[in-house]
Image (tube, rainbow, N blue to C red):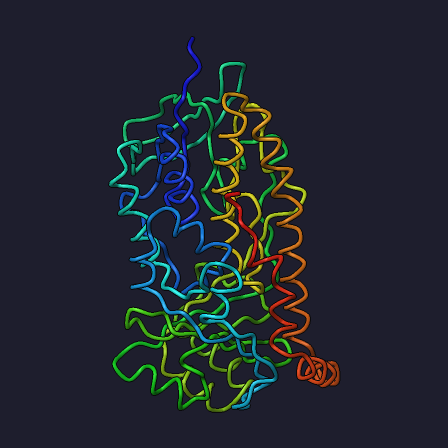
Length: 401
């Protein structure tokens, strides 16, 4: 049997679409297997740091991304409900000049739509919706994906199967030593402040509508930023708690979110009371989970390394994964095993460092008194240039080179 050339990608979220697009631009035939009939990206906003936006720009998506996103002036850390920031990380043109690409905020749905349109226009990509990978086997020829659909199951042979199917990845579950996700003990409450007066309402509550603002309080924080494209202001609050699961009502979510945000400031709590909040239990994948099966399987994005969002790097790491995997496959040509081993060797230490950054942010942002007092003193003593230098390793990284 002649070895197949096709790359099979499980999942049509941001990770899967980016992976498929980069591989197709290398001239590789790609099949995307998506379990939903009409894939879309749930959630609200996300932050695209320069390490991610540079990759998407190289795919020819710069014009649409700039049109549909917002380029924040700064990241502001605010203690409680104060109007003055403890410290600010300057972004805008300065970030783009320093790191070679902009820091953007965008609605997840808009980013997904931009990628989806690009994928549909790519002749090397075939999309099969309403299907899901239910099993994988590997041998000397390559991986065999068992694909389930309305008419039953069928086998698909490929050069590589890429699991981009999220934190509850079926591809990861089919791999040797593939571990299930674990609940982190954290809940994210998400909402979007919409309408023609969204920016005015946000400003009245103390939110800088030109920047990313993180309001910090013991055991809770709120991140707020404009989405661009007149899509309002994204809000996400993180607190500790039991997994909300599907049984939580929107009313209970709204009450819990308002109570938690009200601990930061009364003005923010009052604003929160007028919004529809959705609760998301945050799950993570254990760091020891393998990213690859050298026989022909690779994981990207949350399927490989779902982590808490305190470094705002979930989407960025998935986009980086896609670029690194494609680069490794190109370097090693037909040597699939060598390419996969290099992919994991490159990604594992970087993901570990991003996890550590997120854990550090969580500790600092949720610090109780009097630790928070010391935090504020230290942060006020640091200027913007110091803060930029701290993030060169993260935002200045070029996964495609």
